[in-house]
Image (cartoon, rainbow, N blue to C red; front, side, top):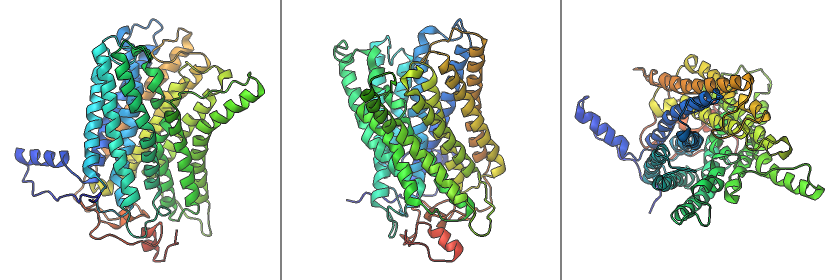
Length: 541
């Protein structure tokens, strides 16, 4: 039995009739083409991102009013949960995982994805699960929910969501590990594919722990919460999966985008590929927080000497190593940009700018999480942690947007003009900073987390108002980027490699055929297309 099912080519679909529309919809709904499955994930996640950003703006509006009368108080807790869970399970993971599904098989020279029907089933399971979760929260379910049946539905929806993501992650990991073309060793896989592999393996390690906890909580809530505390205690057992450092692994492909696009901008090979691989691997250390089922690893510097050292080592492992990994990826970009011989004028593409912005935002969130681990600062229980989560997840979102723009020739057969989307990367930067930095500041003034209202002076109202604007701007950024992609359709054929890419996917036609390659390619370096462009033999690794 093979892990690959070669996608069947669809029959002619007619001339624009209703039957044609139904046939096209059926083709998409049952497709085993990984590029279509990836786009289903990513675009659905982007639409969910708009809704999540709107919810964030509503919460910001609530926090600008000291009386707390903007939104219905009974629904405020559920709305807050919807925002936090949505940032991760409706937005960050599906967008980045969708990019991985769409791009990784082409980058490793595979003609199809491993277990494509499993990946498609994963998409439908994720979509059904997140829908049930939203319905349950809207009907007074979730953490602390007052309707027992909706609490059960909330847990069931989250469980189905996790199963779907695990199925798709397994397909990605199997693809990278087993379907590489001759010569594509693990030392030669592109940075985006490596980040997708690391993310998928991290999800396969951590998410089963969450699923197991959900099963136990489901049984517990049906037995009066005797063991785990009932609905009010659900968050104590699973909220670490939408908090730091777990969120770092959801953002890994955004770091892969930067590492992928920077050498392309300068038209040269990355001199320290394996060090970048190690940096991306360090980010995945955050997954062990979920395995350990710990939300915070704090350091109390007022404790006795040995206790401080023990706490600091643990906190640096979970928060410091992922931050170090992201810093390594960014810092090594400076080596690529360093002039060698004749100065090269880089081509600043939208994909590169999105990659830089997303990496900086992820770094800001990781640095904030490390700071929040210092108990002496008394940031626990404030909006500081929420701000760090927004930094990381919005960073992941911006990375996904950049990847879709960069690989648009392969996915849609279009080239999105940089003049359309370069300003949107800047807008995304402003949106993320506005939605996060004020809450960093408010954390030091003890603004409570969750749905609490800060009953303070006018300064807190201004800070929360800026957060409101930031979330609204992020919704605008996503919609504008989708609009730029949709409006870039042209009758003119797009070149196979219009961006000067270095890896295998740029050797095939745009848009990529259903089965990617006519025959399995054989490569002798990590940058086969760069070898073709330069007319030289590549390096062995």
